[in-house]
Image (cartoon, rainbow over all chains, first blue to last red; front, side, top):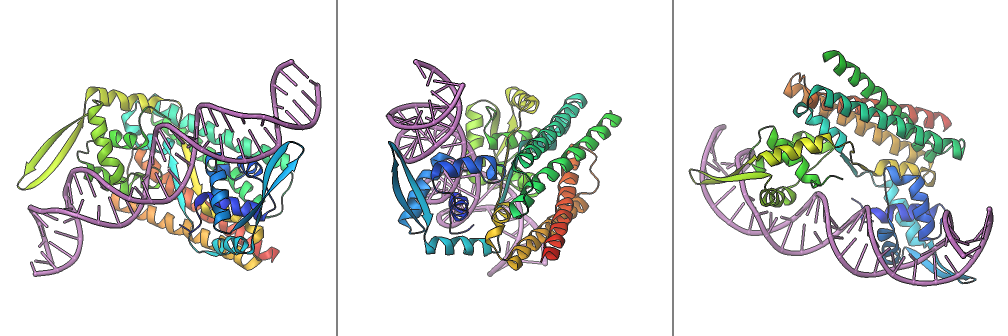
Length: 175
Length: 175
DNA sequence: CCTAGCATGTAATACGTTACATGATTCA
DNA sequence: TGAATCATGTAACGTATTACATGCTAGG
């Protein structure tokens, strides 16, 4: 991996884009990177603390009324760390896909149960495609790389739905 | 998830297919499920112990010459647990894809570095497709669901290569 | 007044990899 | 004889989720 912890990568990137608090970071990941790079409060807040100790971010306690919040900004070293990370030529990739695992063991299932498994997976791709399209419609057209990521998500899900629809048809005819 | 731990799922499934030792399980996952459901020795051996305590597997110490090995078989309860798991209508899905995360932050990169990121990813899809095809050629035609998983892997990688080739072309023309 | 949202944080627990330790056997 | 492969296992460490605890504010 990188010297930056997994959660640090998404935190620093989002701070670079202008986000300011742990809460904002969590909300943003939940509607954007969640599908390929999740982050939870239990990682975000401790990580922000560690990043400040390491000198990559600086924080300021803000008091607007009785609401206390801590806003973060990148230090020059933090910005450099983001750029260096983005330029590293190795990318971590990890997938845990229980649907594929069940399909791998599909010969342990009867024909109907196998078809049902495949049908359910097709439906899941279709649902995800719809969800991603809804996000796209809410955000409007995005002409930058983050828009490409969303388009990738939509088209991947559409491709997967078609692939599993085809498998489903083949299994039914094998029936 | 399921009541079965993640690693228990692949272990029990492989025992059901006839594998017998922790070592065999590790070797098999390394050339098959690794890409979507990994397992390491540090999980496999302790998990086999736990599964025996739970009564899902039974083990036997075998001594052929001076080689000591412990072979495992499923108990009736173990077989039932596998079937129940396969029939559960929920599948866990988790992805950590650093390439997509970097692309998401692509506006922080200059044009050439962004194109290079996309080019590298296309190359990674192509390499993976080749690797999966090589596995397929080594194993020969497989007319069961595990063969479908391999075909899915190959075609997904081919699709991804094409998708990123297209993005690369669009980025170059945006130049 | 009550609910949703803003906002921060920790503790318990689960899950995972890596590196290390050990030793036999097979085959070139 | 030396490398690869068979074979089992643990310790240290990193990373993650979940649930919980706390309290303010805005709007219906």
